[in-house]
Every structure is written in structure tokens, then in C-alpha cells.
Image 1: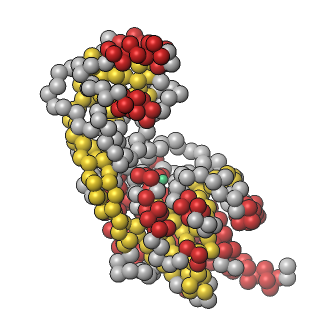
Image 2: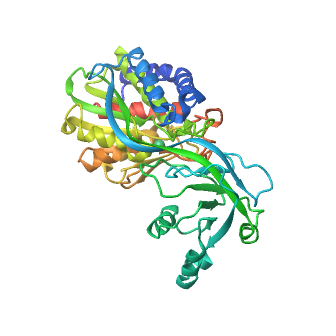
Image 3: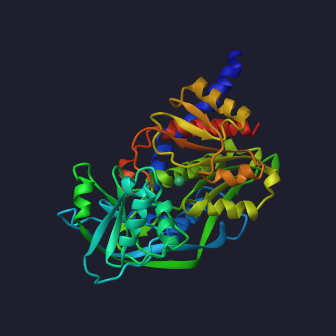
Length: 434
Ligand SMILES: [Zn+2]
């Protein structure tokens, strides 16, 4: 390499570096703090949390220079969703204290209402000794009546399988208590079960066998099923200078699990306020005249991801520009840590692009590792690659383990590799522009 080339290149990297120093981190921090705050109610379907989050993005998009395909950046669509807006109490005599919603227990997303003023009911314990023995299971199920809860202590059987077991037998009983040893993990549900259910965190100090066989419990809550909740993808773009009709897509879902009861919400700082923070930082970067792209770049904040990749499903069926005109989709979900580097879903499917991403990282030592894995339906890239569009989904590894619980909070999210990741992605984005 001649010296002049070196100087030109150094200038390019220095200006990119100057852009990222501090300001990228600061803007990311501001976005994560805002989107994971109480005012957004966990960006779900209680108190219109997702609409408040969409409105925030819609306000940021024009400020950082994104254009809109339609009048207001929104692509609206609707879906059914079950919500738990009121949780009055859950008591269980196995614990000799008041149980705290979010910390000790959460209501399952598919739960129906649970009667107010019902008396304390007996708890029957369903463990593996019973479940895997057909005779014992039969007699256990005969014992289940309207006067009891069933506490489920099964490690290798999914909660969904147990729900199906009881649904198929049309049992009338007070509800299911799923006992969890390590953590509570919330989800979203589009259906309502015929009985209420909760996840209960049981510390190791409690002997499940001894305690739950002698326990009584009660559960008071109200669900609200919304058959047609209107949500929206938020979509902006920067027109390409040379090939305006071809697109590179950066995406991140902005929805999360919402609120449960009147006070408890799932902040979703890492999942996926952090991805939105990267999305907006990238939009800001490519809006600068010196970074103007050759190809158009679309920035999509997807809705309804936690419900089942609904926003990207809708977009790929109703695209605002032909899917055949998309060169590449780069989806970002969980960008907040990175001690162990990143994983690239579809890395082994799109080898050339993966090798390039890995090489950029090796040359610059941005993050510890860039790992590859095969295809997986675990974020919004999926509907694109299933329709023949090249797509990556990257997520960070290592650091705090909070996931789909109340502990995924902005104040504990380090964003420690955020600036390095930003450099890696912009450099890969520049490669895609070649
Ligand atoms: Zn996510």
C-alpha cells in the first residue's frame, strides 16, 4: 500500500472513528433508557406500550434524516393478543411470606382470569414419578378437582405440553403452578387457556416434595383478550446515490413483553431497546453527507416480534419495495453485552458475507469473537431468508443473563461492546455497498 492511499484510508477511518467516539454510546444510552423506561410499559399491549414506543421512533426518524415511504413511517397491521392487565394476588402457603409479582411469580401469558374471593385451595404435586408412570398419572388426574391447584415440577417436559394435557381432559380446577428452579421467563400469547396458570420461582432451600404436598394456594387476576390489536412496523430509508431502487435493510424489533398487572413491566433493555439503539445510530451515520450510500438503505423497526415474528411476517407479505430488490438484510436483536463476542444466525448459510464480517473483525480486533450458526426462526431475519433474501441476525453473547424477565433493565445493561459493534457493522455495511 502506498503512503497516499494509507493517508486517505486513515482519514476515512478517523472520521468514522470521530463519529463513533462517545456520541454513539451516548445516543445508544439515551435510547435504551427511554425505551426501557416505565413510561413505555414494556412496549407491549397493556396501556398501549407498543404505540408509545412506535411514536418515539416515529419522532426520532425524521430528526436523524430518514425519509418515509408512506406519510408517517407506519405500516399498520393487527393481531389477536392476550393480556394480563390486573393481578390482585397469588398466595401459596409453601412460602411463609407475601409473594411478589415479577420476582417470585409471573402469570402465564395465556392465562385466563382467576376468580376473586375464591377460598384457599389444596395444591397437588405433579412430578416426574407420577407423570412418566401412566397408571399413577391416571389416578392423579382423577384426584384433580375444582378445589385444587396442580403444582408442576417437571424439568424435561415443556409447560405447553402440560397445558395440552389438562386442556384435552377438560379438567375443572383452580389452575396450574409451574415450579421454576432458576428463573422466571415470560412470553406473549395469542390464545387463552381454559384455566389460569402462573410460574413460581422456588428457591433451592425449599423441599418441593415436602412442602407442596401440604400447601394451599389462591390466585386472583383478570385477563383481557384483544382480538384485533392494531400495531405497526416503523420504517424509514435513505435513498441511494447510485442505485436508489436497490436496498440494504437494517432491522431491529422494538416491541417487548409489556406489562403485567398495574405496576410490573418487562423493560426489555437488551431485548431489544439495544437493537433499536443500534438501528438509530446506523441511520444517523448513513444520513451524514460523507457516508451517503450508493444503494438505498431501509431501517425497519419491527412490531410484534415477541408474539411470533409478526411484524416481519407482515412486511415480507406486504413489502414497501420488492423483496427481489433487497441485497441484504442485517437484523439486530440483543446488542447490549458482547464479552464473548457475537453470534451470526445464517452465518453458515451465507458463507461469503460471513467470512467478510469475520475478516473485518479479525483485521480490526473489534470484538472477541464472531461465531457462525445455521438458520433459526428466532428473530425477524427468518421470514426474509425463507423467501430467498440474504439475511443475517446478530446477537451479543456473554455478560448479564437477564432475559424475558423484569431484570432486563437499562441501569444494568453495560453496552460495553456497543461502539466496537457499531464500527464492525458500519464497515460491513460499507462492504455491502461495494
Ligand atoms: Zn428480541
